Length: 340
Ligand code: NAI
Image 1 (tube, rainbow, N blue to C red):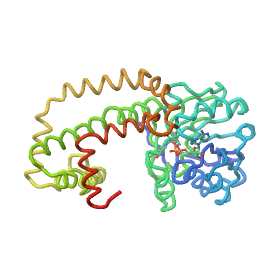
Image 2 (tube, rainbow, N blue to C red; image 1 turned 90 degrees about the horizontal axis):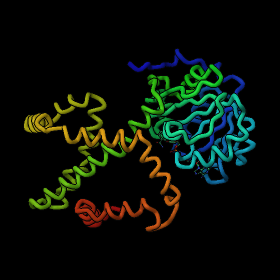
Image 3 (cartoon, rainbow, N blue to C red; image 1 turned 135 degrees about the vertical axis):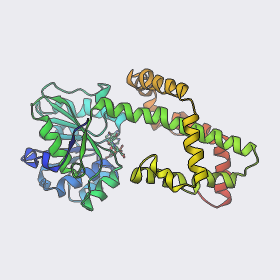
Image 4 (cartoon, rainbow, N blue to C red; image 1 turned 90 degrees about the vertical axis):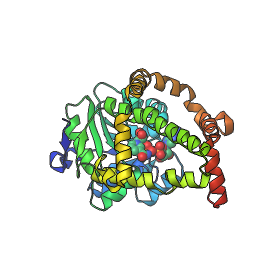
């Protein structure tokens, strides 16, 4: 059973006199949310430094009263605790070149996602602490739930205990950003990366495929685009089902549906043979995610994600996906309804 850590397990005194640097401060995302929560938890403003390139986010941080620095080398020299909150694909380049060479031997590095640590893409010294404090929540909710005095789900782990004090430090940081209020779950970068990439590369692609195939089958059977987009997602019924699954239980939420629906769904799911999908899922998990195959492939194209038009592989994938019957049907309906 995974341990769950609460406020009582975490002592903010572990952060006394430490200079906390946030590398990355994107309004609405993790950097801005976590920095504000930490300050509101009593960490003095003069001990918090926002390291951000000179962009609109730096200006926003200044407007919120934070001390901002754009020279990462200088920021590294004073860092005791570094929150690494820039996009995962730029972390190795920025951290390894601009931060790591000047970072103290006893500094602690905090990641909010397991990816770069699991795939060993960051250059840490063995004397440094490396911890994961990974909210399972978008940044704006990390902030708004904190402001309401509520917690949010979060994974916490120690990946390298250079100082021998990494766990109390990770728990104090989790508490300071508001994550131990409802319980921070003990995890690891392996577990976080496996679940995250599995969801992105196995579970959701299958859900997207199921929706596109279902759309085509029903379209062929004479259903209109208008009826289909509302029936399948624009009514927000799938969103309501997942909300009820979270509140009441994945299976129990079915009780809100008609008897015909409950019988159809439960009987239909139990009758399906899961052998092929299980083999397919295992193949993705072991041979694509945990083996590092995906990470190596992605590292080949990640620089192209900055490009415009068709030179950007993501734009090509969007174009192809919009060519499907579902993509075309939705486009027609939204245009007819005057929706963007
Ligand atoms: P983000 O990906 O929106 O990063 C924005 C920040 O990065 C800005 O401050 C920007 O100035 C800086 N930045 C971007 N490119 C840069 C570059 N080339 N050089 C220097 N700075 C650069 O931040 P986000 O989404 O909050 O992600 C940060 C971390 O949090 C990631 O590890 C992510 O996986 C993790 N995370 C994100 C969640 C989310 O909902 N967005 C949820 C949980 C974890």
